[in-house]
Length: 151
Image 1 (cartoon, helix red, strand yellow):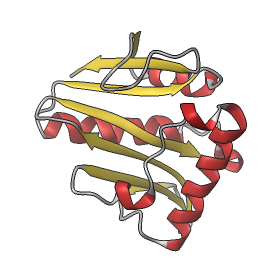
Image 2 (cartoon, one colour):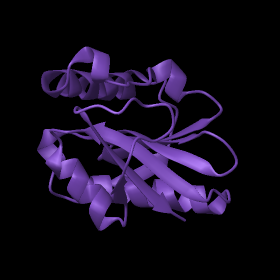
Image 3 (tube, rainbow, N blue to C red):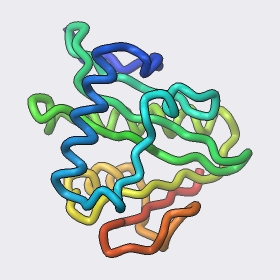
C-alpha cells in the first residue's frame, strides 16, 4: 500500500505522538528559547491546515499551512519519522501545502527552520524556496534559517 497524505485533525492520539516526537527531535538540536512550536491545539485552529502522511494507516509524517493574512502562508510542523526518511514524504507534504496555498490565492509562502537541519533545507530548496532574512515576527538568530517562495 502506498503512503497517503491527507488533511486531518491533529487532535488524534497518534498525531499527538508524532508531534511529540517532532518536538523532542527539535529540542535535541536547538535551545528551547529558539524553538517556535505550535501546540497540537494551535495546529487545530481555523488558520491552520494539517497534512498527515500515513503508511498502512500509521502516522509517519506531518506538515501544516498556517495562514497569516490574505497573502502570506507559513509552512509549519514539518516532520517525517526516521524510519521513513529518504522517501520524499516531506517533499510530498510541501507540495500539498503549496497547492492549497495557491488554491486559496496566497501570494507567498515563508518558513523558519533550524540551523542544524540540512535535510530540511534540501526539501525546501528542491521545492523552489530561497533563503531570505527573518520572516513574520521571528527574531534574527544564529539558530534559525529562513525561506520564502512567491506563488
